[in-house]
Image (cartoon, rainbow, N blue to C red; front, side, top):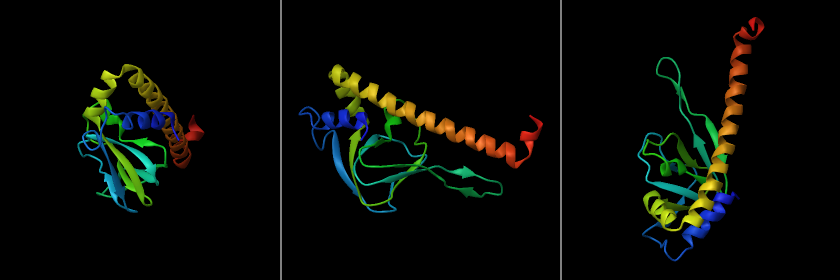
Amino acid sequence: MSKAFDVLTEVINHADFPVPDCWQLARYQPNEEIIRSGDKGECLYMIRRGRVRVIGKVELEQDRQVKPGMADLDTGEIFGELVLFDQAPRSATVMALEQCELAVIDSEKLRQFLQANPELGFRFLRELTSTLVGRLRHANDKIYSLLAWGLKAHGIDKHL
């Protein structure tokens, strides 16, 4: 369980962050889409039970594409959190791998709550930043591995 999840649990249990005005529970079945890439985001999600897969989309030549699984997230993790920082469309699709129970949190209400409760807000943003840094490092490792594979697959590595 991530520390950001723990702090966010404090937030949703706070008397000033009531259900259903600020957040609600949602259940998803296996293979059900939770977030679709390109859609406008308004909520972030806490996985209270279950697992989800973050799916990217890779365009190939001749209108072909593949949808690789970028990451699997488990109970105690958060996703859709970028909605707190910008209004850009969703960057990935997220699908339930098994029955899931999620806390769906209104991002604008969360921002307002965190501003009104700066100590809790600072703790949450510190832990969320730590989570995002870990994901960025993991993504960098994948990029480096793919680059090395591409260089070897095309024989370019012999010329470096």
